[in-house]
Amino acid sequence: MILIDILFPKTCFGCGHLGTYFCQSCVKHLIKIKNDTCPYCNKASPLGLTHPVCRRKNGLDGAVSLFYYSGLFKRIIKKIKYRLVREAQKEFFDQIGLLIIDKMIKYKKIDQNFYVQPIPLSKKRLHQRGFNQAEPLANFLTKFLNFRPGDFLIRKKETAIQAQLKNSRDRYFNLKGAFSLNSTSSPKNKKIILVDDIITTGTTVKEAARVLKIGLAEKVIAFSLAKG
Image 1: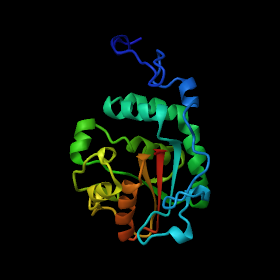
Image 2: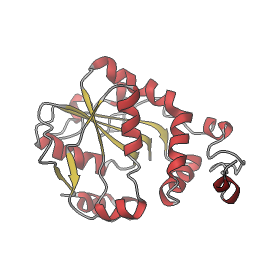
Image 3: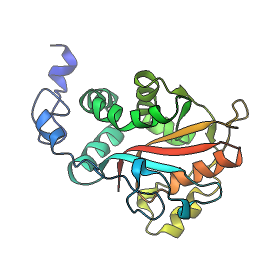
Image 4: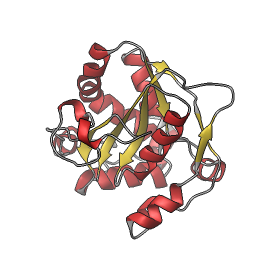
């Protein structure tokens, strides 16, 4: 046992059990999403693809998530984000990796040429947290499913935390113009998986998709660990 384990012992984010951030019992109690839905009407849709009648110009072509953002999962994500426990992210992916692969391999079967783009943080938020919580998930997809890494977006505007805004109008204008295209990497004619840890109203991924589509991306699918 190393000194840091003695001074700061690991405890399960769910039940407080010593020795791990995520005990198997708590991971089993996370509520998995069984039926994917269209990101616009929220009605059932295979692979979370956008229904033809729901399609928007420069909109998402689909969205999928693993878990519901409630209860235990909400506590887990908040502790990872705001305690800055990067080691916990790796341990979490070790626990749920097969679920991620099972969910996203269906897209791999549809097309081999997806690029993975994590939602970028602002410089201020990145400095505060020390890491972008979407990047480990994006790295997992590139490593285990052989999707290509993408770097098409930059965050050009400081924004308020979406979860702290009360209504959809405020959230929309908070994110409007938050992203721009990276001048060194074009999304033109590319199929892209947008990655974030949580999708609640979907405002963030929809704004990012809008910018990518304006840049002539062929298809944009959003993927998150959880949705609210």
